Image (cartoon, rainbow, N blue to C red; front, side, top):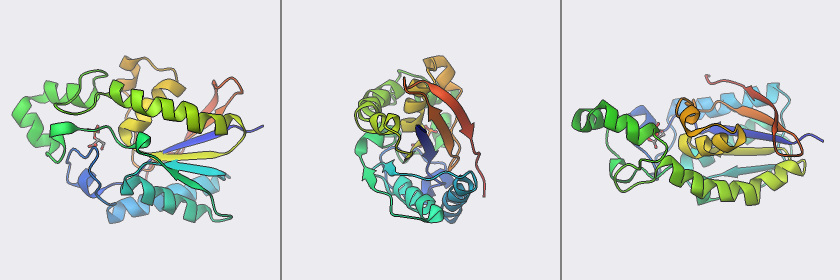
Length: 208
Ligand SMILES: O=C(O)[C@@H](CO)OP(=O)(O)O
């Protein structure tokens, strides 16, 4: 039985382009982001991937990316399940600030710690640990059982909510996870064993 899980970060958003901390804000995709999402769908199609079910967040950049991927794949309609458990990490008071300006205000090290440490939350926001605590129970209860049951499953979400899942799937230590950057609209295909370990990982890469 094939137990396939595909993770995709949304295409470039308006706020990615402006270099702003985004978190729970809900900007749309740029023209480039739309094109990246369709290109991801075409790469999945070329790789022979099909889906039985798709999960996404409550934020439009992920939802739109998910729609465009499924549209490229064509075929029968795939049920889409949206849940805030897959939303991006909440950036608290940093939300809407320019990332370069934030570095000028607080210094390189502090901003790097807020962005990529495991358990230091940005002021008023979620640490990556908090994000794991939110996304993991949802993944275990709603997504993983379907994958193990043989449903080909797509999850289109966000840089940090997906990093939270990747940490668990790839059994990465928090330190190893910090090195792991996710590119926009780059599908990662996991084929899983029945015991939920990973049989193979294939990164289809980013780009148009
Ligand atoms: O702004 C954000 O919400 C995230 C993802 O784009 O950024 P970062 O890479 O700083 O975690």
